[in-house]
Length: 133
Image (cartoon, rainbow, N blue to C red; front, side):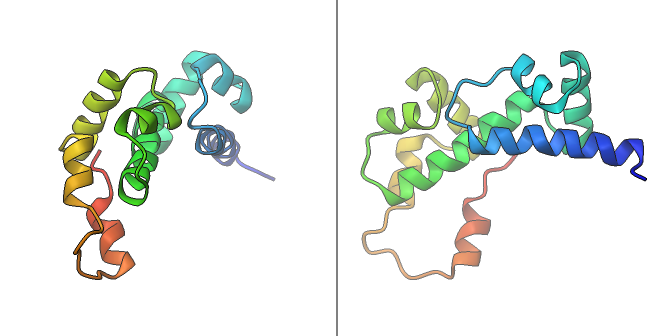
């Protein structure tokens, strides 16, 4: 028999998985609450208690993580990446990116460019490039 806490965690994980799969799509609290089968207020409160951040902040961080990868690995413009990861405006993207990563998307791309960069083990790269909360 599952406990109430286990059931709640499964519901929150279901919603978080949906956010991970559809991070570039417009997602709102009512839709995520329906996925978790709870009310909107309960969803927001429980998500924060379970994962340590609000659903909105989690989604922003997830989008920025994907943008970081695209900035490092592709030649797409910053504006194109902004829209690909689900942000509605370049200004919001740049502000959110700077808030989470600590530098602008353009600066991040320059600092993490491949040209002439020494080979670094993937585990170090992942730890170094992980956005701070």
